[in-house]
Length: 442
Image 1 (cartoon, helix red, strand yellow):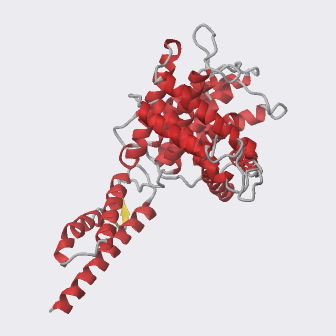
Image 2 (spheres, rainbow, N blue to C red):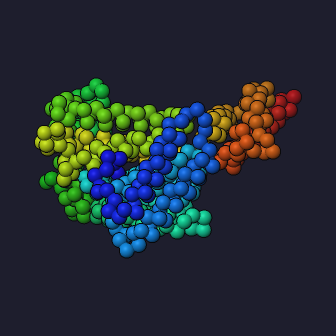
Image 3 (cartoon, rainbow, N blue to C red):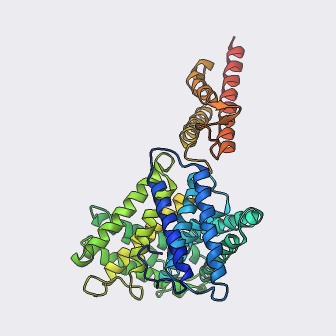
């Protein structure tokens, strides 16, 4: 949902105080999100979470006879839940119910877009299906720990996502024989063309090569149909043929436009390209540079642009609808950006940002030790000294077996300690192997 409220103000006078309190909480959450001088503490987040749930209880009592009413209160409440959810990821409580809220919002957006355009692959749905299953388990386990109102809210959101997913899966299920593989390939080529179309420097040769791949697939058809070895037309032929035609037509349009965008929609295009590029960069440097709450601002920007469409179409400042090329290009950028946000959320480690520097160092050490092991080990135990020194320096940071930040015990102790132990085990295995080899040579 967008922050600019298009919903009506509260109708019940009692909701005005709730709206004011929620706006204040949202402002506090925003300030906490922006503060980079210190790590986010679990206690700060839980205090704000409890205050939000107090307002939810009051709102539910007021709306007991009109539960479907939606006003500006709901819009601000959504913002609060969205921020709280991302804060739970930031403090490493990814596997607790509130963390599921932001992810269900993004999944719903993705599934709505896939339903709208009808262009998706089995891989897209498989990953989302696994994520929904994991979220449902988290919510079910949380029934004893969190408010029944929150559990019901999250369960309903998961049910909506599951319904959309089931519908999309049924559409793919109509493809038979070799058509699923051809369909997957076509989706991949289509996305590659759209990516090439939005690069800072347009490359005709890149798009031409992709179009050649489409023509190779087209050459497999007999009388404009995909047929089996026995000459039968498999189920789903019409859908895959239609997709192939769309891909060929899109490649021609992209080649003719050469990345040139009309002035009327250029500001929106530039904003979306900028968001996509920043999210792409974050996906590459996530372990070192991402605070999950940063995703909130990207989400809201995308939501505002997405919800500005009229009957699914983009319009310029004078109310004119966008042509096909503009429409598809802007939608591609929106969907690609939501895809990055989804990836960044599901890739978030259940470790507090206070422990992330240590956790990231240990992950790097683990990768190095595994690489040394896979390349034949070390010729002398002395070669392991740099790794051992680093591991011991990290181990010495613990107090009574815990990594502390001031007087705080940040979330994710189990994950960091487990990773530290694994690094010590790898180092020990390598040292024993090197010593054994030295003894045999002696």
